[in-house]
Image 1: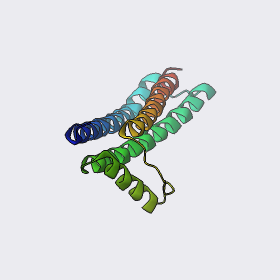
Image 2 (image 1 turned 90 degrees about the vertical axis):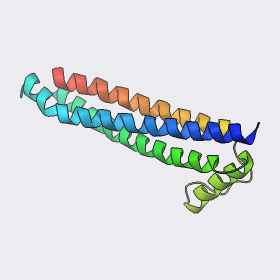
Image 3 (image 1 turned 30 degrees about the horizontal axis):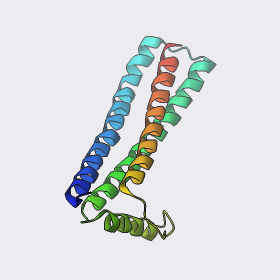
Image 4 (image 1 turned 30 degrees about the vertical axis):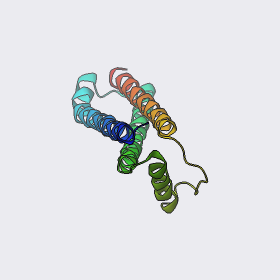
Length: 144
């Protein structure tokens, strides 16, 4: 693989991750701003189901924010990878950063860009599950 193509892929993936990290935060902010309006329309009566749903919505909102923060961190790591000439050097640089931060032990062998991207795709899936859970729990809490 040509090094320019590798750098372009890493940079494009990092840019996409920044977008994937930002829109859920904006969605949660809009939902929090709309919560008093929905509460006034739905009425002041609180049932045990709606109280539990609000707790689930709050927990899933916190999880969504945490996943968004992790995605921003991953985006920065992919930008670091894009700044190196070769995939091997980029992987070694990321592994060194993670080892210095004591997030991962120093590894003997590096992972490829594709394997790192696959790990981040799993993180994206978890974020989307948390967003879906937030939406469903918010609807249940507002209208039950």
